[in-house]
Image (tube, rainbow, N blue to C red; front, side, top):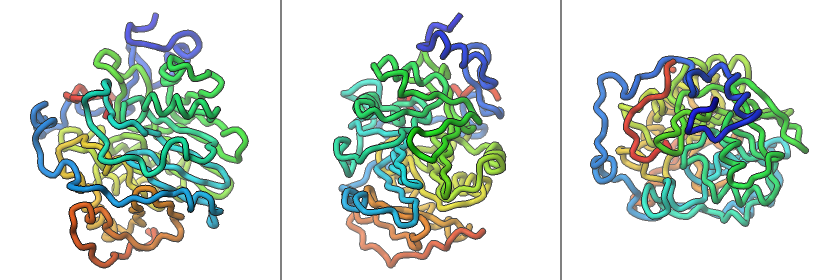
Length: 377
């Protein structure tokens, strides 16, 4: 018998119940996490979350560019990535196009009139996207699963690859079941019409789009592998030792996309932040590092540019090949050698000379019950 908050039924619910991650009516992380707040930390209050903190939003528009001209050109190295904001990245890999956690909505919230609002529009309209071969949805929080966006993408007939249980959300929005592939951790599927495969892998987070629906669907990282290149996409996660197992079973990776923003010490088991993202990169065995989950929505108490500034300082000292493209800037990782702090232009600061980023030669109970004002992160 399904629990009251389940949308899933039939074969989908049978698959959920068969998952090693599912017990007592909900999904669970593999390793123990703090049952609420990380030990020794203090939770932010709702007032502090909504009204407190300094420099939570940029003082002006962030530099961005249209990717359309670059997308019309061949990918000479076989791998090109375009960060479109937050965790939305269009990756061109071995002749195919994959879009991660697509969110074009103005707000990431259960309601349209309140909640975290986008700093500025996505640098390209949804209608202007080129033909896609696959859409990845890592988990069901509002800043990763945006109903109007996925409904529009489904009209194109693009297939969706997602975590167990999320297919029920998609079907409830009239997305055909034939377009939906749900994966448990370590399960793989081929992307039709391409030479790519996609594998769901562990992450350490939680799920739910309402207070009564916590952990009824799975959360995952995702790996896409082609004949020449591979990529890792973290979704949302805390630092988990499973990253070593991911490296062993699915690595190495040419491109690693890790979440770095919307973190707080109290949420240390369910979000990375920049320092833990660099530790995760090491566990994964390296690869060109494209930070995501920052610079788009006000979802935490830190300054909006804190993740970028911290990475700019720490990445070179740890031998990380850091990619920090502007919004809409299509980059081929193997040809990207420098990082320029373009985000400082939003505050009218003079950009310093570009700093070199060396090539890369060179951690369970149920999900936390920490107070989260908006059930999407």
